[in-house]
Length: 233
Image (cartoon, rainbow, N blue to C red; front, side, top):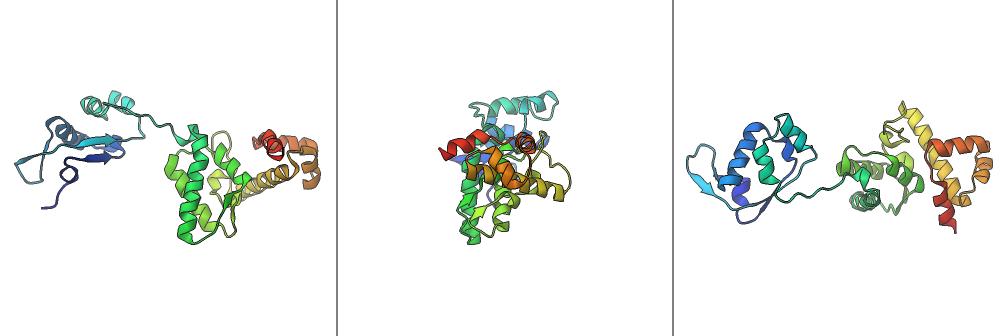
């Protein structure tokens, strides 16, 4: 008879991911294991003891689920002995770049590519996006970008369309072509700002636009010009 997860984890630790997705019958079974420290094999009447440390995780709001009856209160309080809150990626922008670098190294190595850096424009896009899919979405985004990248620098146009200059709601501004064009414009502006040390007038002349249009684009794309000035000092 094949051993179950709790049986294998006896005298050790078991990690239960997305605990909020458990069905009501499964919640009852888990509660019994936590309270009685025993379980039964399918088709058996013989209870088996187990001593397991349980670590559970969820991206759902269990308090709200309890109010609507979707998650058992007794199970919640059994699990919520030592809670640890991890903020989503959108609230940890300092960690976001470290995650991006980690996944870049991981997938570049797998693909046999020597991608050494993430461009300034691409970093800006990563930083303004709201990341509803949290760390998994960051990983998928970088993996896709690595597959599209043929040079040694991961550029803004390698990122998914959903990141091509999102609006305030984090959504792409329209069709794929419009997103790509906006992404290219943003990338060119950032590249010139970096080259000129944040000199907006010089960037406007180089790109063939007026200083007024330049100011509007910087505001629209939420580009921090001061960062380029500091980088050149």
